[in-house]
Image (cartoon, rainbow, N blue to C red; front, side, top):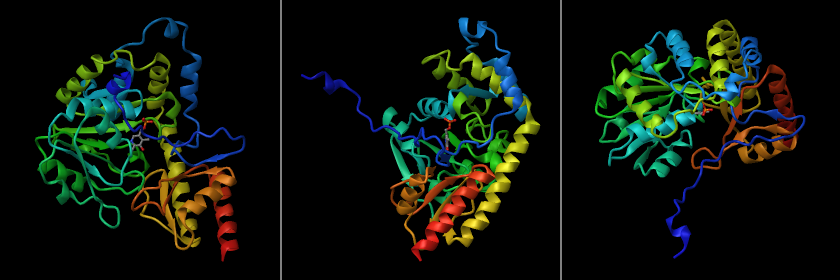
Length: 353
Ligand SMILES: *Cc1c(COP(=O)(O)O)cnc(C)c1O
């Protein structure tokens, strides 16, 4: 007769550490190493006291309109939430209601199975190929919906649109979600397929390429009917999810496209240089099209390198999970930060040989 019998018990998602060390190099949660546009900071300065006193716009019209203009879609095709985690959680609740299992890769964003468990959605993990690719044939079976990131996390592997279209073609009766948290770092967005597939939901975020992880803004774009259903669920749960500060800063961010492209360009340039240097140090990795590299070393175990870096106040991510427990996920920082990491790795590896 304990009250605990009626408690919903879940195993929560474990986010990457947010350490508070003074002089640390933080390469563990794929944040942008550069600040957001100065125009975003201006928008913050220009906020009036009313944005505290009054409720924010529940429809988040300004930000949805800015995104609609940017991506050349109708405002009714845009849904906004408190980070893409909030958007995806709402989308799971809205679209994954079949008794058939939803499908996602065995190596992927580790929040998907947590939401599925939380909402009681049956799911199946589909093994990626040996070289961490999605085989679309594996997704041609009965299912209650499909989700995968592109590029995938934590592997950084980008699939092209023809693979995504193959999956969409074979699954007209379920919603297919493409989580594009990292698409701005060199991939082609599935937004291009929206006109052809009304069951496609594309999810993006301000947290990585737009340097605003702390403001918590994510969005989904799909056809109007799909987005309508998503809004119905959101308004049944919490009308005022987006705070006015995030909305105003988000609008300013979308409008400064030159700054956005410049920042993303810098991250890509650093990534390409770091790829070469990691190879020289004996690392290998699937070609990364994200703002991180998923690397394994030819002789030194990833767990050991992870601890060694941590002692130097260099934080990278390590997942003690099947198939990937000898890999480090290294976010791309500034050139200076990456040089510090590379210098340390070089020294550490040399002293082991
Ligand atoms: C970072 C990330 C998210 C969540 O980002 P938000 O900060 O909640 O917008 C979603 N999916 C993947 C694959 C991610 O890496």
